[in-house]
Image 1: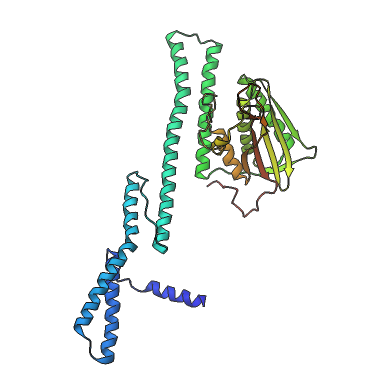
Image 2: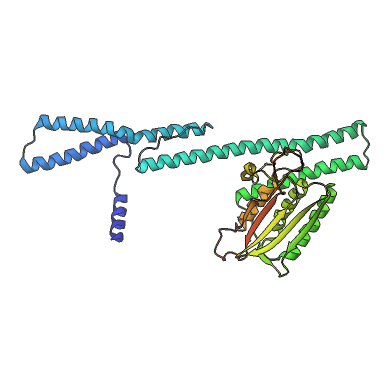
Length: 371
């Protein structure tokens, strides 16, 4: 039966479409009704040899009038979509189409509204990205320009402290450019994953060592600890990209930890997943801000901590590429030591879960290949 209808559809596809030149659907419906009525009347004349003229003419006029009235509701969403599409071409994404019907036109209108909403959100993010990138680039460039101008004008000497300030601003600018390049590769889908079995103990030891050096260079008094089971743990992952995730997480934890604080990194196997937890002793992340912490240029309520607001966004993308999840875990509340203050979370904990089994060779759901 399916083959029969497939053959019928193919036959209908090759038939001519005489109504395609007509610019109005309502006019097409009118022509369709007149043509169908004329064919019926022809059969009637052939059958009885006579047809009442006044009754026939009145019936045709009423049919045309009825088709125009009924077709108005059918075609108005199409006209609205045309006007909305022209408005979007001018940059206006606020127009929406009334999608009240349940037929194919109504489904198309609902899909159009969804597309318009997605385009509006993409345009908003694009504008925010441009504004944030401009701000983030201007800050180190202005500071570096000021240092160099002072040296050229003789206000400051090119001594070691001054050069360190210039170097710090240059490094900040380099980190921001590198983060933006990573995000552009992620958006374009050209970030390859080269998976291999990663020994968790060796990997965490290397990451902690580098995080300790980075924190010391930034003047942060933070201690890092690792806690994992004695049994060896391995995870199929791209070591370079995974290192990028934990470098960002540890840098973020060290930045928000109090002087003398401890950042704890734990790893354990839970079912078919390997769970990592990075916990600091800072103020924690309020529940209302948690849905936004993995968005670009989100730095919560602290905007002068030296971060670019891109580290957690990159970590989120890379973890998803590995088929895992990353989220802010709930922490127990700590009673305040100052009267009148509310209880606060005992630091912040970021939880990363990665699958312990790599996807099949033909499964590209979690691996983007370079193209």
